[in-house]
Each structure stands twice: as C-alpha cells, then as structure tokens.
Length: 274
Picture 1 (cartoon, rainbow, N blue to C red):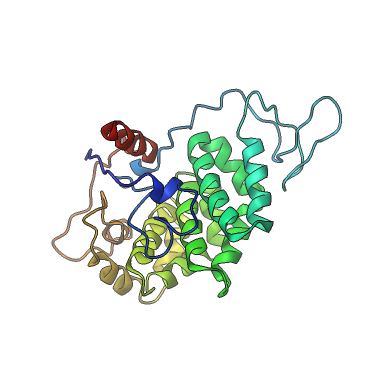
Picture 2 (picture 1 turned 90 degrees about the horizontal axis):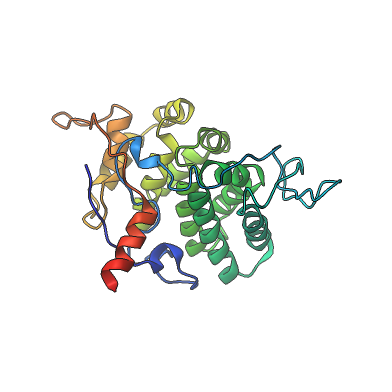
C-alpha cells in the first residue's frame, strides 16, 4: 500500500500556539503514515553516522563531561551527532518555557526524533522527556493544545523504537491513551489512536498491556467510526487488526507498507505548492 496524503505543513511543524495541532485543529500532521510495522521506518535512521558513546547528552571536548540533560553525561561528538544540542535545548524549554514556547519545543522535539533516527530517539528517551511528557498528560491542568502536541510528538519518539515503547509502557502510557480515546474532541481521539498504534507496533509488552484493558475494543470500534477520510489509514481499525480484535469479515494486512514517511509527505506537499 503506497499512498500520498497531503495536509497543511503547519499542522505538525507550526510555531503558533493554537493552529493545526491544537485540540480542534485542522487535521492530522506528523506521523500520519501507513502500514502495520512498516509505518515505523524513520527517515533519519542512518543519517547521523558514526557512533555515540554512553547514554548521556553531555559534550566532552577534551577532559571532563560536559553539560547533560539527564543520562550519565557521557561524551557526545557533535560532529557525529548534530541533534544532541537541539534535544537539550528543547528539553529545557519544555520544562520551563511559556505555553507558546512549550508547544513549539514539543513539536521540534518530535521532529528531531524523526529526522535524527534511532540515535536521536534514544537520547530523547534518556533525557527525561518521556517522564515529563507523561506528567503533562496526567495533569488535568495541562492545556489541551499542549496535550495534543505531546501525543503527536510521542508517536514519533516511540516509532520503531522498542526501548522508548517499553519505557512509555512502564509509565502507563497505554492506559493514558485508552482514556483519551473517549475524549469529546474527535481529532484528539484520532491522534490518540495514532499514537497507540506506534506504541503497540512490534512491542509485546505494550500489546499485552493493551489486551488487559477492559473495554478497549469497544472504544477502538467507536473511534474507528470517526471521520478518517483525511488520514491515510484508520489507526483505530489498524490497532484492532494488530491485537486480533478485528470484527468478522475484516482481514488484517499481511504485507505492510515499508515506504511511508511523514517527512516525505511534507516535502511532497511543499513541492505541490510550488
């Protein structure tokens, strides 16, 4: 299955406080990609090159460990991995910035995780961002647009990255997303299903946790009836297939699409606009 889905670039990568990605926004953005399993291939998986020693985000320029945003503070060669500075900068902004700055930084964190591939995802997972994001989602006082941004970013941060998937599972993110499936806002319900798809895809522990949630099938069935016409796939239906909860008469895909990528979609949309 290969298809091109065109959506406003601002929906995912916008810097404004309320447009697109906020609750009630204009539609799907980052991560609207296809195929069970194959949907999780990051464009930047081999872009960083070289290797990174240790788990921290510190810069070692010839001696002691540099500043670190979580992790052990082990050395990172910025020439090999240029994204680490952005990860640290966005993390600090998300922790203490204004709402507008937080919205932009969360989006950028998701973009860095996408563009930087597995290495970037690993460092995002080790800098404390997962715990911070989940705390936002659990806080009833967190503004709805910020929750939307966080769910969108996490769909990229955990995409095809088992350690991040398992870490989020340990933070009860499966239950959080299940709760969001009942949200009154349709776009937020669909984004939550989208995030759940990537949280569960290829991860036995999160799938097992999902199967233990009473009523999940019914909630996914209801969300699958939402308007998914602007999305490449109905992620609620894809989860039902993944978990073996598919209603009779619907056959799960056997050959997932391995080519879909959000960044390619954005580049395509830009090309079509010129």
